[in-house]
Length: 311
Image (tube, rainbow, N blue to C red):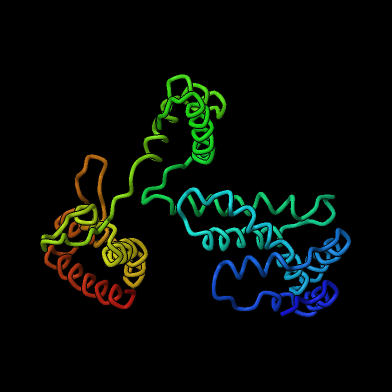
């Protein structure tokens, strides 16, 4: 099958940029297809970017994205050493590319390729940090820089050692100091990151052994009932009832009933004691303590009904 000419391909891109990459069955076919997509000239890129910015032209956005898909493929190859599928890296990089296209300002005097590289790498970095190990290994900016540079620096040190017939896999004291100084981090952080990166993955829920015995993994003791979804929903509902629900129920009471309830159940003095007693309230309102109790019971029933409706 002959490939379409550049002119025909460019015309197709102008008509419907999303049709240039048809549904494909494997990654190699996708990479081959995006590498055949035409690149935009500086003038075409400026026109498309202005059409997107000024008129929200979706087709213009499509042309900008499609012409830079090969850039995402190229950048994704730099991160194959982390054992993650290249297809997933490309997918995350494409997300970064679309974010870059959305934010690109054609009047800044730079090409989209230079602007998009930051967004593509940032999205791939986030994906690797979340998925390379079961536990996130880098949180601060310095740790992330260490994470993405330590592997390449170790390979450089190893190549020098192999050239001297000194085969090893760990960093020497001088190499640790060199990494720490170059990346502006502490020696302890270099040692900790190397330990994390060299450690093996552990199955959360290992399969039973060949003899039928159940193998126990971290999943057996990592359960946290407090963060189980149902428990969290119930906890939020209780908190809501204890705040907004109580306030709504109190609003349904008359002034005397509300004060009696607040004094009897909701008041806490500075010394830790509760509010007024039945007899103190009875003396204030000039009625018997039994009457205060009856008003309290009636108010509680009314609040219970209001809380049920609130829930």
